[in-house]
Image (tube, rainbow, N blue to C red; front, side, top):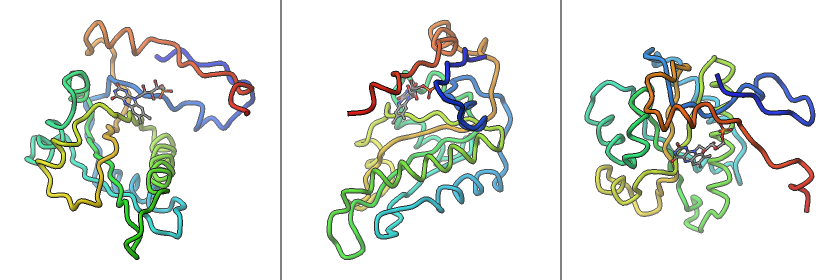
Length: 187
Ligand SMILES: Cc1cc2nc3c(=O)[nH]c(=O)nc-3n(C[C@H](O)[C@H](O)[C@H](O)COP(=O)(O)O)c2cc1C
């Protein structure tokens, strides 16, 4: 179990329990569970209600789509990602409907993923986001219009037994979840 941080102020239990595991239980999610997560994302706020977030996702089912997603990951992430039942790529539409650049698209995708993550916590699920993937590979294996930009990948699932991980990743799993003190954030 993850060593818990010290909270300077009491936040809701649902927010307290979130962390980014690498060991996931071998338990599939239902389509309904997955759609509930994206539904939570769909209701996030966005600049001009543009809803720039996009997702490519697959259950861990050996499908062509799962394999394409998996192949985009760095080998370091591939090592542990196979434990998770749901694999996601997040993308943004970088243009507003009127064709002008939407410089808030990344912000709004973050809000959507925040919603998705909180919904996951409520459902007893955990999310692990990843920057470790190839955008070029994603463009190669998925046909993406130029304005659609891959941003992150993520996995979702139930907590698993860390002993399934490599020694290196078991060490990371046991690390204290650390944060800068609140006062360092105020400029
Ligand atoms: C945008 C983003 C990219 C990340 N990329 C990776 C990654 O490629 N591989 C990985 O193992 N963890 C990745 N992480 C997880 C972070 O390392 C983790 O969130 C951070 O250390 C804080 O830990 P916590 O989420 O358990 O509180 C990423 C997290 C975010 C939000």
